[in-house]
Image (cartoon, rainbow over all chains, first blue to last red; front, side, top):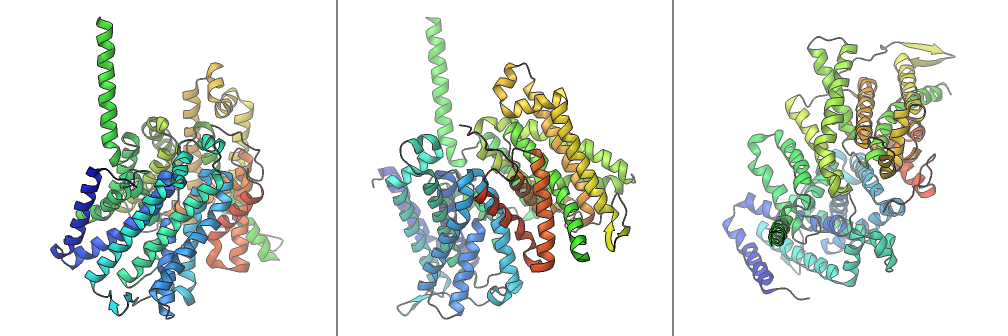
Length: 325
Length: 291
């Protein structure tokens, strides 16, 4: 894997900023920063599904909920965090396969409906199965993990733990996307029929991309539960799933850093738009509509658009120049 | 047994209301390739327009007429002109995301600008009930069923028997040949949007008395409409009616005999089962792949 010098420099600046940032922040700021990292993990997974494979998944928050509840329940049962987390990831992967298989056999768009309904079903499950999930009261006092006697209980320690996990999962995803496997995802999105004719098994690949996305959401959920210490059904509803989709699309779906930008916006905007109260979501919703009309490629596509515009201008100039001669 | 018939009848009534929202959804998809994820909110808005019109002092029928006009202008014309048309070039994914954004936006505007509380809504057919062979039936159930049945049959007749209707079908089947035949494609697509606006307004009129007018009432209705449309067959308008009725009835039966907690999951289970066995829906015919 080779990165350009520019890319590498930017990456190290970002990393340094992430290492230093906590010392400049108060505890709420540190909490937001950690939450941002958790969102990034989930959004990275969704970006694979949406941006690289072209599928619309509308139950990402539901998968995150499955991850969070799995970890919370297993921790209560005395299972170690380091075993509960892989279990949560695996469960989400399998659920992704189960829900994706029937829908993807038919049509890509059907996945949208199937996942929409699935998120609803998960919410019903979280609410109704009180013996397991605590119903609307949720599960309280979720412990943060420790490793070889070192406790990640403090906010700062937990932040660094989440940071490391985020970096590892991002690197893993980058690796997958550069492999022939990942290129097949992009081929699928760009031209499924041609991809099929070159020997890519469409159904298998789309299904796998969806399941990997779900697994990332599961990991995010596994970190979310100990971060907030208390989980209940509300944060895993359809609204949050839509927000995840918006994070990916606003940042620029199919761009590796799109979700990083998108989740920062989705997390910080409500903080700055507190004065707008209930109107905030209205503004957000219509802003997304406007963006789809004028900038369907997301914020990270601005540069490309600009280059395209310049190229067009230049070619027009040439054309008129030729005409004049 | 009497319980069973009562559940059956009210299920059929609710289902036929789902069917109308489903029908509009299907029409939009066929004629213009628009997958409208805000269809539920398209039902919620007319409900609130009627509430506002009634608050001003209009009787229910006049409020309904006002809502119809507002819907055709806003949910038909403006939606097509300002949201769907500019996005035609950027493909289905953009439209899906935009309508999802629209759904969030519309819900939040109603919540922030009007009220977050559920509001009671009068029924066109009154609250009375009558008994038939021991089964209690409400006039509003019978009314909903008749109304929805008439709408569906009327729409079928319009699409199959009139020149405009057949032109609309031609556009849905093949836009290019329709245009080559001299059909005004843009106008036909507009008609589809207008018909959808009418269908959602009627849906709102019939379903709001039971669902109550609330900003998020569309979540459930929209979802049922999608599932009903696909279960019945996406490219068949009678399919939407069948799908709606099956969903409505099964929901009632599952709610009463198995578990009320998972009533809302019935539509999803049915949807998954149907597309596993018959991907084109119960009445659908295999669609050609559009490249």
